[in-house]
Image (cartoon, rainbow, N blue to C red):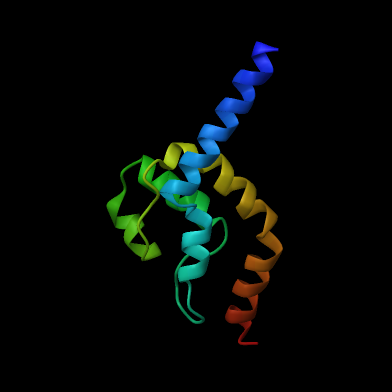
Length: 99
C-alpha cells in the first residue's frame, strides 16, 4: 500500500507544482495572435526544452516567460501538445495557405 501512496503523492505534488508555475503549452498557445510567427506546434514542449538548456535567444521567439520548473512541466506539456496537435497543425496550415 505504501507504493500507491507514494505514487499518488508524487503525482499530486508534480501536478500542483506544474500548475502553480504555469503550464508552458497554455502560456504559449494563449499568447499567439493570428499572423504571428510564434511557434505553435509543440510550443510548450519546445519552450520547456529551451528553458532547460538555457537558450535565451530561442526563448525570445515565444514572447512568454517559461515555467519556473520546466523539467517538471515537460511531460505534462508534451502530453497536452500531443492532444492539441490537430488543432495547432490546422492553425499553422490555414495561416500558411492564407485561408
